[in-house]
Amino acid sequence: MSKGIFAVMITALLFISTACEGGKVEESLKKDFPKIKFESVKESDVNGLYEVVTARGIFYYYPKKGYIVGGPIITKESEGSVNLTEERMGQIKSAKFKELPLNKAIKIGSGKNIVVEFTDPDCPYCRKMSDYLKTRNDLTRYVFMFPLTNIHPKAEAKSRYVLCSQDKAKALEEVMSGKFDSKDPEECKDKEAFKLLEDHINITSQAGINGTPTFFINGNFLSGADTKKFESYLLK
Image (cartoon, rainbow, N blue to C red):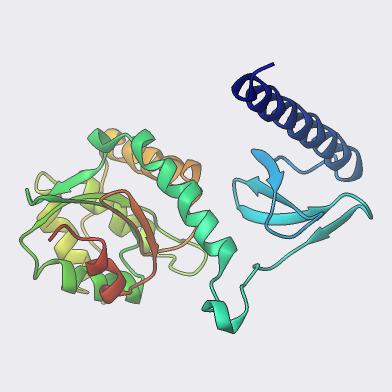
């Protein structure tokens, strides 16, 4: 038997073994925690600990004891204290970038950098980023409204006002400027705007996003108002 064929056989056997092991772990997880809905299960960087991806994020499962482990895996300081969980979550969310129906978003600009934005009109950090984004002319922005009504009860009406407007980009700037903080915007009665806001919220949730501001910059995931990191993803 040639070395090449032997190597291929070994690789195939390892793949089958890993797949079988992964299947057993999934079954064990379902048995220990039947109410948990997960998207995938795979080995983590820690021996015996498995990464479990759900719509809400990542947790870890230790099948030997039937334990769930919360919190991030972080490398030691000599290796840069890298948050591996955060990195992995970014990779997973970035993979969903291509699935986003951008035709439903508010399009602003025509620059070379593609920026998908999830925003709440009453979120202070969203407003900070809105002020920053207005200064750039190298972006094509696709904005999804995601009002966090549990902490911003007026954000839904403002989001609907934006989607109800003929000039949505202008309306977005108005709500972000605080124009309607002391007075309510004109009431929207357009059923299409109601449906569009519902679509925006569902699209955001399906992308695994639960906070604002959140961005995909040329496919790279970014959570929060970090302008330096934002710029690191821009095309030179």
